[in-house]
Length: 297
Length: 270
Image 1 (cartoon, each protein chain N blue to C red):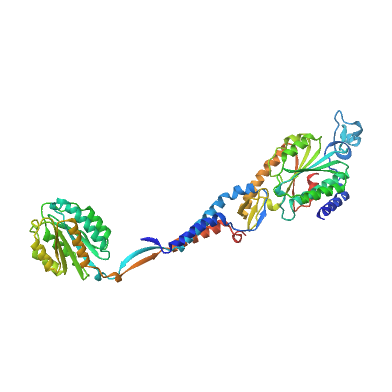
Image 2 (image 1 turned 90 degrees about the horizontal axis):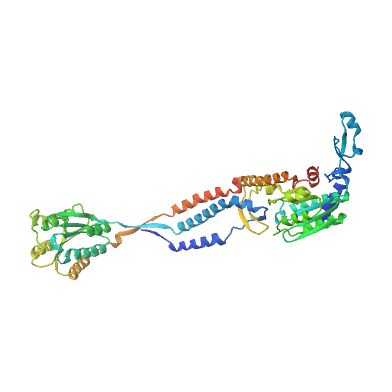
């Protein structure tokens, strides 16, 4: 983010303007005849010199206020959480506006996980990874916003395939805290990946898979979801209202609280030399245009 | 003290140098020989030069400059720009010119008057003796020239009312005025008083230049290039003025503050 380290110094710009208007340079003065003719000759030069003066002083003030670009740097990735969000995008999620509600809650959740790596996967007829693990929350939120029902088909629910695919994202992970949050409103009805294989992969990669079931109890297989959660050391949640889904994500957020604040720092890039350098160049032009007596001899 | 010094120098120059004796260029009766030219009907037969006629084989007549008492008007165009000078002020050079012209005129027993023309004030001096010249010199040296503007219209009106005169208009001539009417009636000599520094203002230092007329300041770091540009523009203005003078038969000469006023004046009015 671009900002100034000492923004209050910019107030000096007002002083610069006041000075240019009111503080005239005191020089020796003589009476000179026929200044009308001379005025017409020096007018354009005078405008140029005044503009240069304002620019030089303005740039010096800007340089003094120290323009900086701040970036957040994570020192040790292994201490942060890596969270894979797995979202059911089958046609059934359209009922009772579940998909929209879940998306809103997930956006809120993502924005709270400031220091964690996040990934996003969706599934319906098949599963695919929308965003791999990244610190770029803005991209994850943007992609989540753009996902609509039907992007991965409408009729089926490739739940295990999604778990398997999502687990693969952690293959090269160095983090000790690996989490997947799997949200669905249905049962797996494809035979692309068996449950055992998906679960095995999740266990191998030491992933805690929180399972969240939304909607009618008859639609999803609570036992399987509970089994997945328990086998990976996580929890199973079920909800059928906006508030309850919100609470679930809050609970997960609390359970997996990030403790790595000390491992990040703000990297400041200083840009004061650019206005100062430009001011120096303008100063040289000013001297050249001014034709001081040394140059003029 | 300065006024007396100027007058004394002028008196010394004028009364000891014969070449400054004749100011009139009007041809007529007199003893100041001008030229020999072929006789024309109407010429005075007493002025026939028989020696020259014998040599050329046709009648030749002597022509003299008029020697009768003539009316001399010295007009000083006062302006704030006269308050400038590198060696001495332009107003001081004008005081020297007044002294020289005044003394010459008194020597020849001409009717001489001097007028200062400025926007708000006019002052008239009649020169009967050198003490009148001294008063005029003192007047110009003590004149507060700052914020003074020249008044050409007053000069024009005054000279049009006067009888035919030998007129000296003295100033720095920064205004482009029309002298055609007064030149038609009078014999005019324009004396342009300038300083070399004002025509080539290469100060080689940073100075604020103040307009003495309105007090406005311009910040001009004068250098050789700018000074040359200024000089070119000023020369163009002067050329325009001088061609106007030439067109109307006005004798013009430029005196610098560094010049010897007596020598320069003798050259201009020869």
